[in-house]
Length: 416
Image 1 (spheres, rainbow, N blue to C red):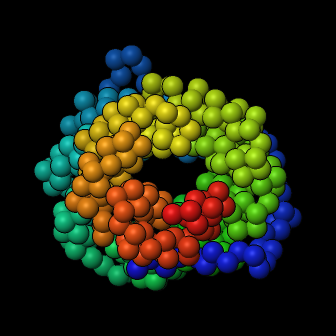
Image 2: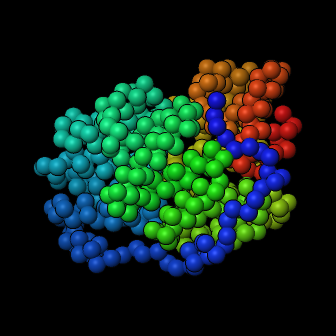
Image 3: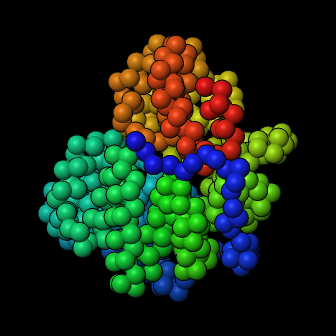
């Protein structure tokens, strides 16, 4: 049973204070060059054999992608790493792993698995390869394989193991254990004075605290992240969600989001703005943000990265259900997770194939995930076939997940 925040938001208290984060909303262009980058990039010529240069420049491109959200930087990092692999005589395992992580970011999970397996076969960096293989198999929905690799890296004093065992417990629906492990990881990051690991643990803990209804702790950890990395878009988005979903202040949430999208490019921000505009009953803003989303995801460089968002978009905002079915089938091919199967089930359900949708839910979704959005969509299908007992069970869980689902879902859950 998932632990989630109570839906009784009528007595919500003020958690956020704009004075805490206003200083981080100032619009400034993120850094997309450095002396370090210029130095190594200058060493790359058309027929370059400068192996170290490719690795270092790829790392800088990854940093630029993180800072700006621009997919072009992720693709450039991929090109550098692919070239490094071509010319590397030694150290290939590290480049295979780096390319696998790049592919994970691009949602090219099967390609990531090929790279991870290639790194493992070489034999160097065994722990890094085992950790990577856990990550890839979790993304692919190969949970038995993932668990096997998790056992191989077991070490309660290791940050990498702790964040992965936290993720495993989250998948299993054991949120209390997830938080305990992430808090241990946070302590290790703080003792090591490692800025990147601290930011990573703060933002992830903030997410988990939010799922557990610990909104004050969630907010505090997003602020901690911003103190270390003022341009961290993910932390700002997390604060915007608290402001919108918990405090019900859509105007302030949009102010935060607009400050992010001035210099950060990620199509899903338009979907969140659409959701807020819907809550405000502002149809023109809804349409504007929907249009911005459609235009931004047309970039072919995104590949499969926004397939799941696109399926949900087609189902929620259009009647292009055939398109949704096609993309959902692609997602199932790409990763056989309960989430992917639910996208397919929802697409079939919306297209009238209710019995086919039910079969998928029963075979691939039920009991395999505790994610509220998936539970809601399952309940809709159970209701369509008249299984009101199931609907009642799920509805009880959903009524405790309003914060996570967002204000617009309140009436939809009540109507189940």
